[in-house]
Length: 365
View 1 (tube, rainbow, N blue to C red):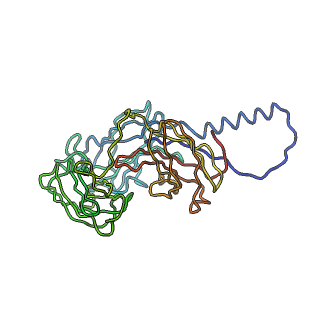
View 2: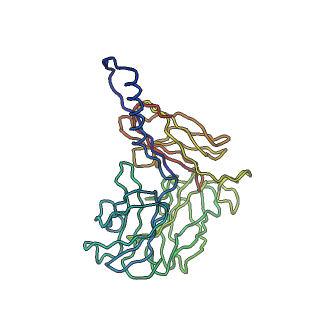
């Protein structure tokens, strides 16, 4: 999902200035507008990503970039697996040129030679940077093989098959790796099952598609929505997660309400921050929102994308498209310089959009 940059203004005390000719005032306004436009560059409508195409053990890794913004300098870093390359060893700087897709090869630094797995990251130096990261197995396995266990490619997933309210849930896996033991946990909605209650294990056997039923723990028996997760115990684990409505609605529905027939939505929801009253409220304007959806609005510290934040209200999209709404800034975030805000529906495959704003009184649209 795309995110657009919003800039807040600065508060200041009222001062008197000597009288100036009118043309000076016009020039000042034009100059200020130019500075503001320079400070808020247009953002790419897609997120940059990288995939691993080949590895020469302890020597080089070749990546393929996708959806990169044009004319940006990306600092390339590598680090231990699990770090996402953050604060890693700088190995190069790459200019994205015309943007889009390109291939590049980087030397593996001496400090990481001998490592089984290595993280790699490309990131610009802006205050609000573009970035992409991945990881790879440090072995020569041919094009396309690095980045996963040899013999397995793809991402494990599972869907909800059926629910018996307060008692059991049945899942159907897809593309599970073979001969792996997954620990299955459940937790409150929004947790993705992380650090949840262990409800069983799943041995993937030959892998691929499997069906399994797990008991809903007593602590969650009356919950309206429940998160469920399957994860291996490796240092670099396989995992998949989902969630379900805790009600009995018949096999095949997964406990989720039946969709209402209607026109297919093919857009990408985004929103712009239009105004801020410091420590009090923020006004947003949506674009391309799908119709007839209820979005939960959350706020959190800058950098969280509003995930797991404080719920400050809801937004019913009605006919969809462009909407304007104002939400209170929670007391827990008052005083922060920057705040993240998110709009997300509660479906298993949700619509969502997020942004952030300076916590200064300003009107920008």
